[in-house]
Image (tube, each protein chain N blue to C red):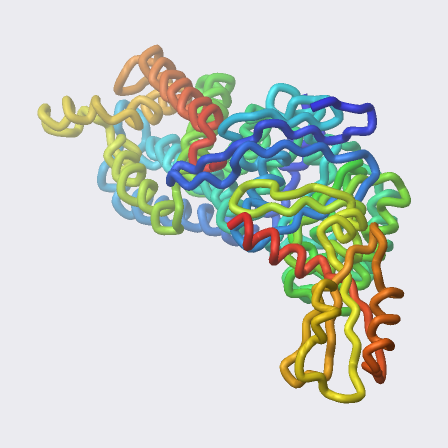
Length: 253
Length: 311
């Protein structure tokens, strides 16, 4: 195991975050605060409680997931896309490191960033609403698992993308709608029956639901289902990455 | 091919066909000796970069094997790659990083623990020490090229690949670069450089491999190549123009210039040159000359001839 190489990539990626602190940290925190002002305070005060949980607190897990998903994807995809774009990828490809080590370095850094961000959002939301976390350990595991899974997904996206437009298109057109329709701001019970069924095909529903369960001890779908779906998606991403490195897809000619 | 202990890179039967169907390399066999400067010479698109990219692990070979210090570049890629430094042709850098950070990053990537003293020495050798805290985008083109070399040397490689090191580089920096390369070989580093400047190969290399259309046309020591393929010529500038070469001298393969004022004699250095006899005969025919000049054909001419006959 080339530990020095993993450290080098990880440090490099974390330094990039530090350089773009405003963009990486400040903007998600600001947008979360805006969500709380609009949904939590302005609209939430008219909604009252969902499943015995104050609406302001109810949206906390969903908002965290929303941010973790999109930040994991954008961090990891940009992290691997940019060296491809600038040509510096030659160095990583010619170094004595295995694909596993490359993934650990890039995905590890991207996941770290989004976990830090998730915790920041958790802290920020405390300024607006009060909540309690029923199962902190489970919450932390979900946080890490989701950050890792979607960083892996972002890594795949970054390798697949051959232009900045492609880099943006999946998060914009696929991930964002799935997250919004994934129950970040509402309980699935509130939807008409037909939509409830359709919603069950949205994988993000399981993520948010499981995460919410760790906060409040109640959720739309079973906890087991949530964990299984998340792990399943993670395995799928790992398989795709395995294939990418085996074939050299878009990395080596 | 017999591998001797001083073979540092052994390439055998290497081919590469790109997905587009273009065959970039046709069965390359080549041994690089430890400590030498080897120049891979060829026109643009000959396959130079493809060849070194395969050795460095950036391009997958279609068939054939490459061994670096006896380690297969695919099955034992860690051992093979950790002794190689690569300076690519393109100046690909992370614009926002500092010089110091990027060189340390390269070192880590190649599995070496931090060693600030060593990195400092590399930067000083390349006159980059004063620039260590600068962002890369603030560097001039020449400094960026030196930085690429610093990155390649950051992990103390025993083999250094330089892909077109002096393309688009001014004369002064080219001299610097050549001195640097010589300094590295003094320390025992094996250097493989690609170039399409014949002058560079002639000046620098112990051995030259000429590559064209993905095939190695010839590999030989630079001096031997010049000797083997080069011819020498003696040109006599005459006092009076000559209308034709006298019949008695026609056996010497002489050529007369259009104005009749210059006679050119082509000879082979390794056998009897026949110069003395020729001069005597010229005197017999009362052909006086003002001056004489001899020259060897340059690598450039050899190269053009090789590529022409091969292409």
